[in-house]
Length: 274
Image 1 (cartoon, one colour):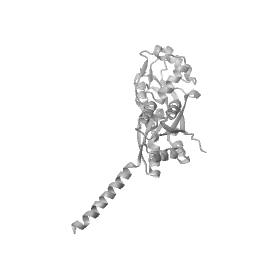
Image 2 (cartoon, rainbow, N blue to C red):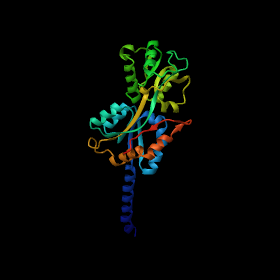
Image 3 (tube, helix red, strand yellow):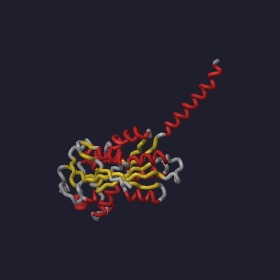
Image 4 (cartoon, helix red, strand yellow):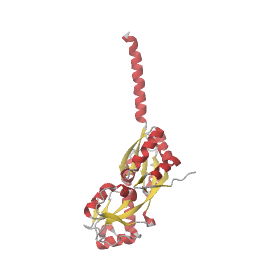
């Protein structure tokens, strides 16, 4: 009798194995800027997407430059970052299929209440950075090729500051994500360029306050790109595209708008709809 059931048991085991493998395949890897994770946005969005789609999302949180490099190696299915020039280059090189805008917020200059560079309350980020450099006031840089780091370097250039010549003990490269860099600035009583989303969720502010905000040059746009399967055939095109379609859809955009901390909205959806 046992011999009669053995083939049936083997067949069931095979079917279960196939089903398990299929379920395991229902995930994508998203290489994303640290701000989307450290701000808590992904913790708000991903359960909604996963419940609606059945697709799990594994996030690799890195600076934008590192996230794009991860995707270039084929180690991600989707990139979600915030450096438009770098994103457009990524697509032009054939590594990405299409860039879509998702949302925006802004950068802010954060600094100690003592304000040694006398920039507090200003709205001109370029003039503020000139004052920081002139005073040699402590400044912490992400220094990690992230979107925030790229924005900071652009702003120093607009201020006419040659960092290679101006750098000294006052300028510290953290080589880290936004949260750790803010911790470093808090411990040093230093200025730092931060994205507002991470700042609003950051708890260890100590003596740090917003010093400069509201300059249009502090605009911070986020984009999402499917990694090109023509470059990396193992890329999960269909579920990756499902994630992109969801996040730019009215449902995904509404979920982004609903994410707040202390009653303040962190990100503002602006995906284009046909």
